[in-house]
Length: 111
Image (cartoon, rainbow, N blue to C red; front, top):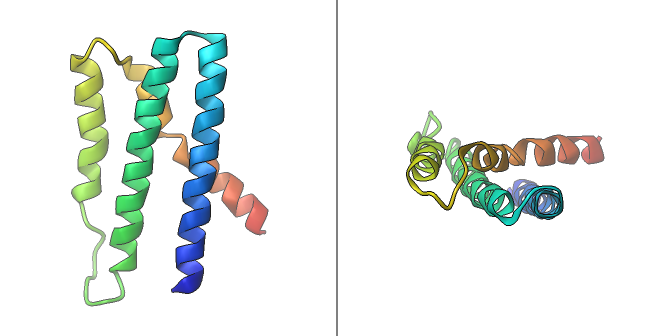
């Protein structure tokens, strides 16, 4: 379990770094609204990743399925970005997906 905890921390850190770099590029290339939406989406992606990791960690201890609570996070992000004028939907969704490049980056560095 110690290896799994270390992997979780490295993945969270990689996601945070990728998110900050993407937000900086978005702020320079586009505007602050896009960068802010990207950061909100990235925060939702980090929360989703944390909930998923906690659910996976419980798999061995009597639970046989992954929890579904983490699926609420992307739904709330979509609803919030559709209703709030301070958020753009597309950058928020791309920000949410930034955990995937961090996951690929982590897999490449571990190999």
